[in-house]
Length: 92
Image (cartoon, rainbow, N blue to C red; front, side, top):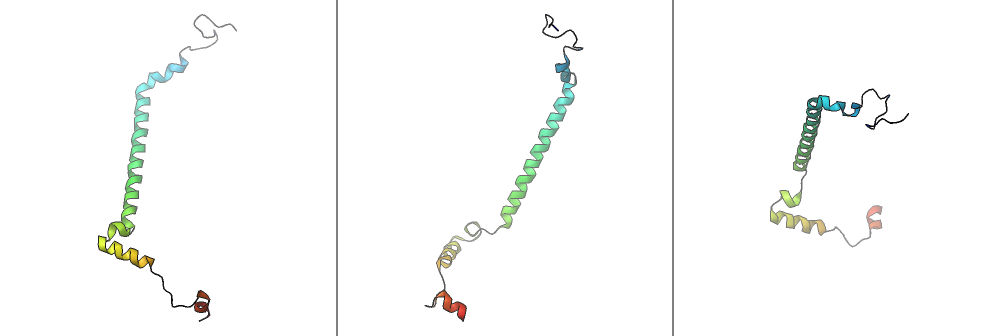
């Protein structure tokens, strides 16, 4: 099977078969545009969900006044100890 001068074999029915999608180019463009819009919509919904979740979490540095945040840091650094080891506490 020798190729013909146009680069296609003689038995090939339609030498433009690979370009046939262009016949429905408007439908193709519409489908791609719809897919892009759907992906953008999903991205926006996902971001809104993350933003709502962030609002539900209590973040002291953000949600407490400045003085309260410093007080909380000081309290966090404290520990309870009465001079006895942890083994004595467990026995009692």
